[in-house]
Image (cartoon, rainbow, N blue to C red; front, side):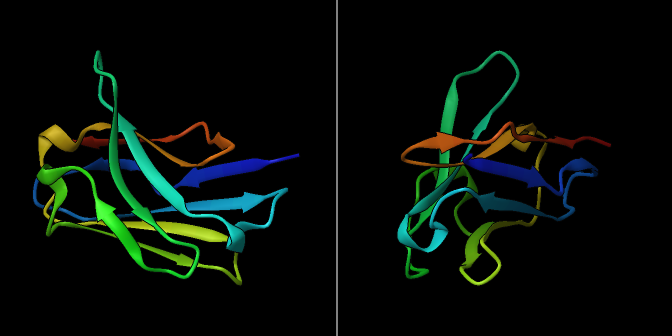
Length: 113
């Protein structure tokens, strides 16, 4: 069974940082590009960033996070990461990791003072 389990979300003040993790199982993690997407309240899905199976950032899709978010992966630990810095209230969303055959339930990130 394919599983993608996100963690690391929470409540953080503007300007703060969080590191999200996504632990994968049930498929060969190292064979797939991986992505982070997010969904803000009342909004559609927004692509955040992607990374190739070799660990090269495909692109940071969202202009609003360029220079602040860093995607990485550990193919030994089957884990995808998203380091988020200088967080803003508009970063508030549920963050999901995904690959071409599925996505996780997400972790809530709330940026508020």
